[in-house]
Image (cartoon, rainbow, N blue to C red):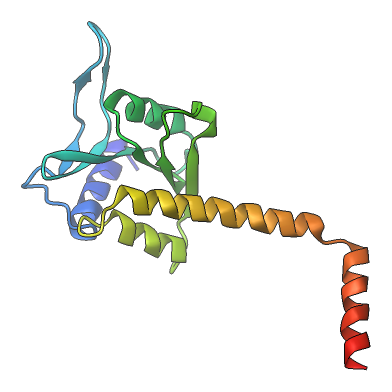
Length: 173
């Protein structure tokens, strides 16, 4: 699918499902921003509310998995701390200016029917619910949950399982 068709599709999605108005210019597309005498940046979509920039959306073809560097560059240039990269998955970034680009917090949401994270994404980005702190908290909670699962997996051992089974059956019998 061409980049223009992807752009048009996501503009419609943000209008129809996320309640941003094209007529009120809450979906700012292809804004040409001069950053020097010869350089410029053109983010795909900037969602706005009451003339304030809320977040940047960077779109890539669904076969691509890259684009985070470009999104992070836009976030820094425009001093916006919420960014969304949409390609083979959805990546939500909470940019922190005191961290290196490679350590920025983000959550990956796969395109899966009835995904709880996908449903939460729609809720969080909806114009009527949009709150930067809620988005940042969602990202933080997802990262913490992944860390906890990894810690649990690292602690599971044959010895632990045997001891737990012994204890369980000693209590029962």
